View (tube, helix red, strand yellow):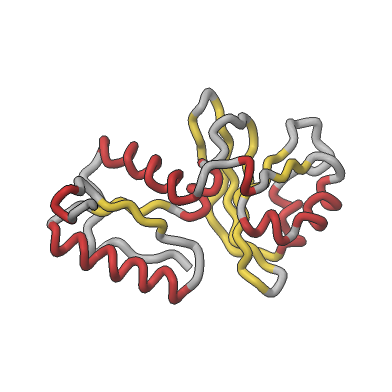
Length: 170
């Protein structure tokens, strides 16, 4: 029963992801924002995946399936409850994920989240020889909730993104 006038802002995942899905979603949000004179806060889909596991400290690798044995990947670290980006988002072959880390290091296990982690579960477990910790859907909040929570934090600091500058990330 919410009306457009009841909103203070709109949050949206801007990718990476499906070309068509991102375009349609962003067009809808821009139309609503324009009509309601609302700010829009764009959130990376990979960052939202990593933010879904709030109770986890240490390295978090967010993976989304890009098909053809490739993933969209980003690396984060949660320290003192704060999610810090350690690597820019990129598309890469699943086989190259191990090059982002030192698989033999004594560092804490790496948490892998997202549909790409589930899709390539066996490969990750094999590559990281016991250091991979896969976080399934049932063990984390929804991605939509994470997008909203991240956007709310940003909305407190800034008015949102200029609609002309808000573009999807494939």
